[in-house]
Image (tube, rainbow, N blue to C red; front, side):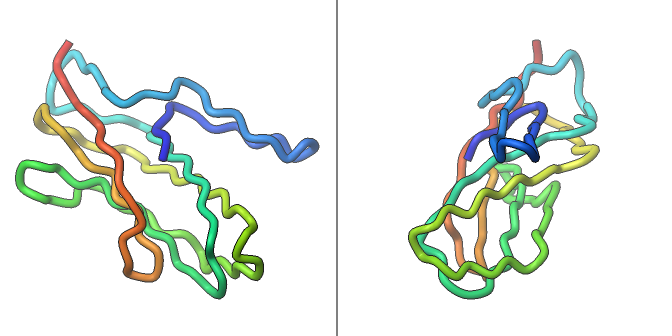
Amino acid sequence: MLTCERVIHDSETGRTSLIDVFNDLSVASLPTVVPALYVYTKTTEALGEYLFRLELVRRDDLLTIAEVTTAPIDADDPVAYQELIFQLANVVFDRPGYYDLQLWANQEPLGSTALLVELE
């Protein structure tokens, strides 16, 4: 999973560009609102129908502060890649620390990555 400021998908070439990939977020003050936070994932070994969900969880108290779920995705080839782009809008960070981006498929955990929020 990669966290970034923006994702551009070129419909002509089918290529995806990730703009400003980051693992930590420095902010001037807290609380702060991040208008758009994108998470890019690419998975494989899927067969059948899936609902993918991304949760942003504050690590110190396990509070889910943002969440987004895809429309149903039908994977018919287990070796094909499923490219998933999640947008979390107007995310409020009210304290510094680690947050975990957790990816789920049909209520089963697939993986996670950390995001560090810190004051400048």
